[in-house]
Length: 270
Ligand code: ADP
Image (cartoon, rainbow, N blue to C red):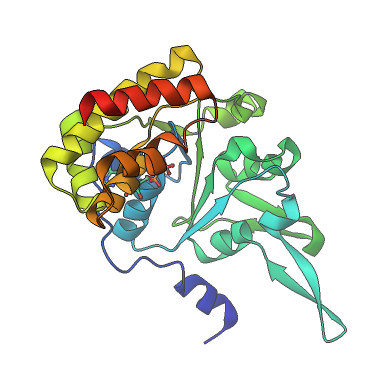
């Protein structure tokens, strides 16, 4: 098996990921893919964007190549670079180039974290050219119909999207994600955390309270992910107060006043 094929195989999702839809997001994304349109997922951290992409990739039977963006991410990290092997310069595709060549899905998670000069490279891919210039190779790659680019960002933070040209920005089909309705969220927490529904519902109620602390300076309330992790600790025998502190309260803040407020919320529910 060629190295590229092997790299791609690793990104295929063989087992159906558990994903509970909140609305018409699956249908919208499938239609976007059919029409060669890029996807923009907005929403707070830990609310299901990555899981949604995994589900979509599984449904489309396409490899999902995910890049977690950070402020050190360079264009070469995305597109590729020459590496010296046994004294020779050998070209290695970056994840974006790999996805374009193979007709895969490339998901740039938290694109807002990436430097502006890095994100410029996605512009011609996201508009109707659907092209990727690989400057170091002097190549201009045309994306096959299967290829999809998808980016996520948290509108709570400053947006890099304002730097996209309106013509590019308006090419994106945008789906807004938020924490699910309490009943849906409890189902997710019960299944993923391995706990009973009653406890899951109480955790969701607690999360709702923490989310209201945003006005008091908490950057973000407890995400679905944190509730699942709390559930997992309880499932493994940690008592609920200890689990809430370790998996739900402490990850949220270092501020003594906010920690005390969160502690009180836990005591009021459990
Ligand atoms: P994000 O990418 O938005 O930061 P994730 O997709 O990683 O968040 O979601 C965190 C976790 O929450 C997932 O690993 C999954 O266990 C669970 N989750 C959130 N929303 C859903 C959903 N709609 N269906 C199934 N699981 C979900």
